[in-house]
Length: 355
Ligand code: ADP
Image (tube, rainbow, N blue to C red; front, side):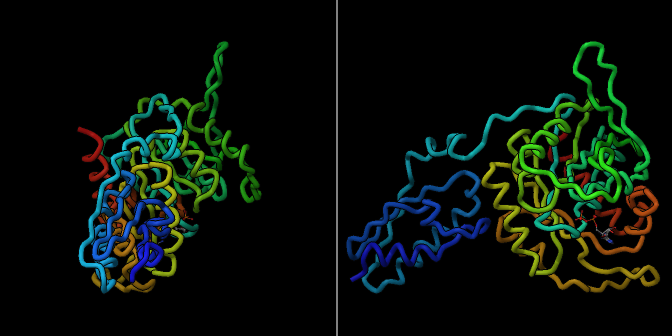
């Protein structure tokens, strides 16, 4: 005869698509009771997992009905859900708005080298081209390369005249974008080792002690991974939407999943997935596309998390060349496929947040 332990064990095979933890461990399914031929369980999903509700309910039913002696599954809703959704249980601390910034878009990736900074820079340029006041905060403390992508690596930001008040950093202006980067503060080529508390304070300074000037959007280029910087940031400011950049390779999905799960745990709204390096377009044969890094990564990640695949950016030589010259492709070659995709992506962000 099926026992509660049997039922719990079988249900523990059902996973949260983001964190890959099982629904029993997460207490999303609890109070499992078995009164043959009936099984009764309580469903207690946090709001960020609502998109998985239908799948989880179906899986629970199917799993329990697979036992020969169970033919009726009753799923109750946890009526204490609203209490368990309190901000303290969701690890969401009080968030403090950044003066002079309307919307924050965070661009992140599970690991380095997937083109996160390239995407962040081109989103910022494309938003600016739509006439929106845009800032770019390069918080990638381990590899701050946006100043060179925008051709301003030689510049030094000034600080405001204090006049008795707290001094504030004045962003560098280029191509209509207000830029602040760690790259301005550290010597090029020098290794940087930031420890937790130092990292927290530098990120907060970057957010709150900068003279942001009435920005519609501040795009933040986060460091890769799921470390202190991301957590510190997500716990400091109200992020309007996070974008996770991934590549088509399915081997890198695990890192991206971890990144998504982190945002979910921190209660950060997810805007969607951008797949970079989707296909290679040879410059001399613009009608050809080669899937040199495999395919499907972005689509799988989007589908399993019920998110939108916002864009698939091809590999194009000018993306590297122009970037090395300090002019992002979306400005230097607006008719290239990647530039048009960045424009569409910026339009999508604008439509979502600006009336
Ligand atoms: P990350 O911020 O994830 O470490 P970067 O944006 O610095 O990655 O990109 C890593 C390298 O790949 C850079 O040299 C960049 O010019 C190049 N790159 C990124 N995306 C593309 C693309 N779609 N096509 C061609 N080169 C790209």
